[in-house]
Amino acid sequence: MRGRSKIVILSLLMIVLASPCVAPAEGPPPALKITEMAVTTKIVRGNPIDSVHRISSASVKALYCFTRLTSENGEETTIKHVWYRDGAKVGEYELPVKGEQWRTYSKKVVDKGLTSEWRVDVLDSEGKLLKSVKFRMN
Image (tube, rainbow, N blue to C red; front, top):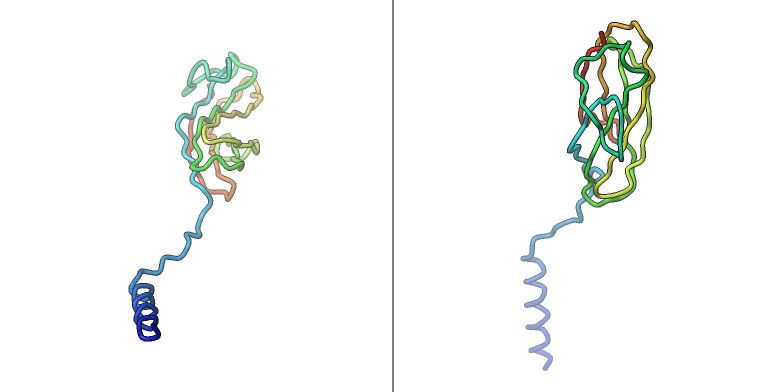
């Protein structure tokens, strides 16, 4: 039995040593993917009613940036909507993400009579740019 035990142990040792060693994956948090993003004049029943590319500041009091996204594992995290007017930051909103499929939005009050180029960036919790949308205010 003693000789047989040595053979079994040596066989197991050879199998273990011949097997590839795979360390557990450590890396970035689960990826967020934006499936829909729009600047809109209104949110109805949790969805945007339009998608603004050019709009008159006299026609609206506020605009909304709507974001629909997916998360790999549904863990809670946050995103940020960062609003820019002519390249200058004019608003930043941290928004929760609490599921594998999530939708959220931020609201920006707009002043009448401002002609400008606008942009909204969506950033993940680490500050990585996920997506941008641009529009013009006449």
